[in-house]
Length: 104
Image (cartoon, rainbow, N blue to C red; front, side):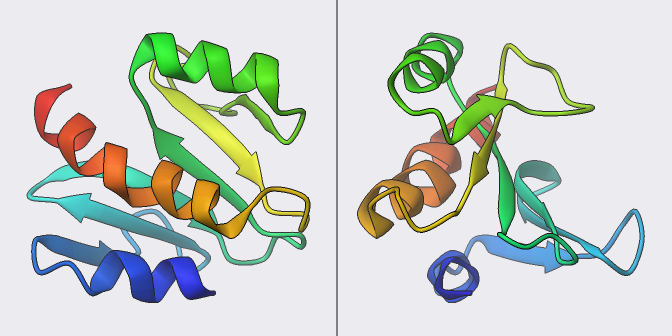
């Protein structure tokens, strides 16, 4: 789970299990930007995203869909089945989200 290390290496990011023992949540301050169910294989990651970017990613990648039980305008699910480049998963999982978590 390299995205876990990638998220936590940023000093402003915290992790917790606020819902249950299987749902790992990453936050900046008190704003979620990423969550994942640890029991899912392949790993599925819900990430917060700008609305225009969320829609364009869904059109481009079949592994990116509207996030289940989340606001579809701002959240996508990434299914990490090995076909998406690791750099894209890191970008979607953190780089853009730090700003989104603060601004949205």
